[in-house]
Amino acid sequence: MFTDVEKIIMIKTAITLRLLLSRNKSHSQSDDSDIIDSYEKIAINSNADIRKATVTNAFSGKKRSSMVTITLIVESMGFTMTDFGEQYCKIKDEHISEFQDSILRKKS
Image 1 (spheres, one colour):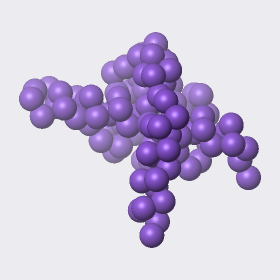
Image 2 (cartoon, rainbow, N blue to C red):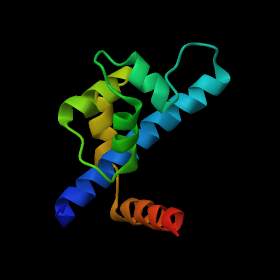
Image 3 (cartoon, helix red, strand yellow):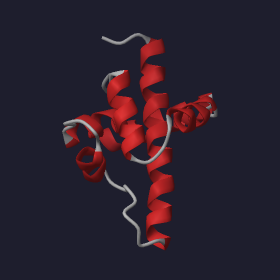
Image 4 (cartoon, one colour):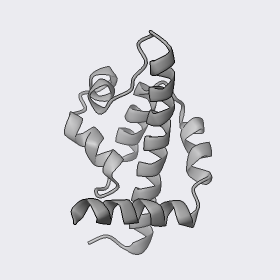
């Protein structure tokens, strides 16, 4: 079982990854370049052998991901860990609550 602090970190990580991916998706719609805009493309583009399921788990906020996995995902999307950290620090309690509510709605 995870502690409350661990759950919050996992959710903040998932929110941050989703925001970065969302940025890529908005750019890929207006551009014809090879922007990474899906879980599958992240897995394929990573510098290591990451399974799509591992990527999906990191974006779900339900499972712990190693720092190595997070770094590989962030870098495969074309971002730096500085980009990740800046976005991570902007997440507020209401963002966490909204994320948790959306997860609960999907379960029911």
